[in-house]
Length: 224
Image 1 (cartoon, rainbow, N blue to C red):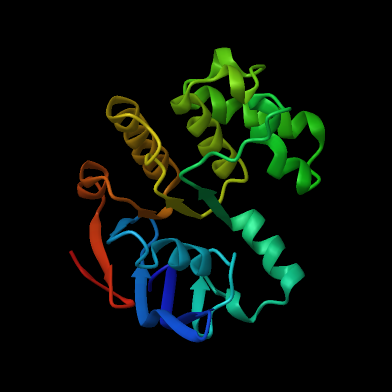
Image 2 (cartoon, rainbow, N blue to C red):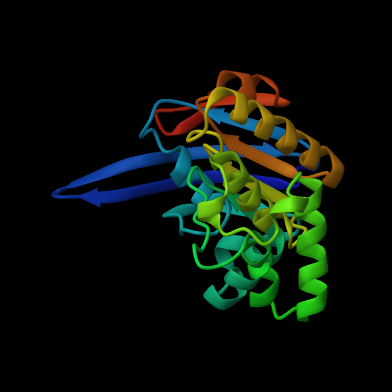
């Protein structure tokens, strides 16, 4: 049985006087420990798909199940709680809080979940160290390179020990060498934590390193 599944997903947006259908009867199954790449042209709906899978947006119809939980049927407060605990997000732009250090940014989800400060700091420190940032804990984002900023964002996504990782163009703003380093770290963390990972990317090397590659076109996923 797949750990994450999307069944007959439909999503559209009103654009002026037109209704734009982005996803249409889309289906997806991802096993525990599987890393799936989603490729496709810009604007085809990859980000929309990840937002629906992670509960950041509501679908028009269909269902998304993570483990035993149908997330589309959860009340908003329960959905927020479930998302914060079980789903990690990494975006193209790191969205770090500029006034906080790398450690403070990474531990933010744990503080929001009301984990005691010492425990939150200890766990965030361990994840940052695993990502090669042991000597950057007290640096604010402006003092970090682009690759370091994105590694802090990865730490923030993983610090709650989620079961699902959703990454939207995680290396899209990085140079090739830095992107390759981040690719390898993502793969290592995925394997170590037995995540179910879905990565939307234009990067062919990152896509080819995944277990499967799917193409989003005409609102549906097809083998690439």
